[in-house]
Image 1: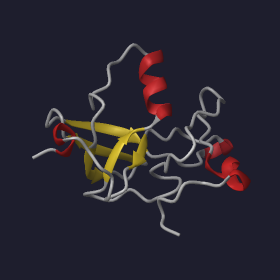
Image 2 (image 1 turned 180 degrees about the horizontal axis):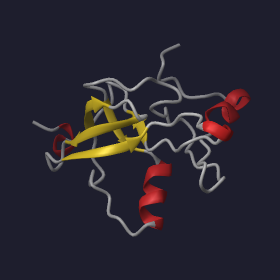
Image 3 (image 1 turned 90 degrees about the horizontal axis):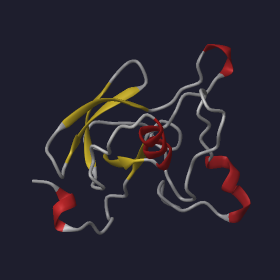
Image 4 (image 1 turned 90 degrees about the vertical axis):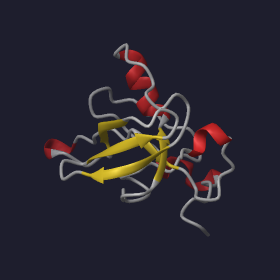
Length: 127
């Protein structure tokens, strides 16, 4: 069983991310959330999670990934990661990788791990 295996119907609830501000469950089945299911690490291939996209939509911000993937270039001590998006070459900072904060609130998970064997279109692979 790889760390990227899709959850079965029996454990589907194990992978739900709860946004501490919204109290909503926002996760697509099979998403491997960075910080919840896998530890963030430099070089990890990632995409913006459904929760991250929803949060950007709510705040009127665009998707800096442009539907592509990126690589983590830095893991920060404040439970965030910085990502270089392959479609644009831009490094964006501060993607939430979750944690249980004081008071029991769970922070958001805004990145998903992309399996290394994923088939990506040429524009998504980066340089």
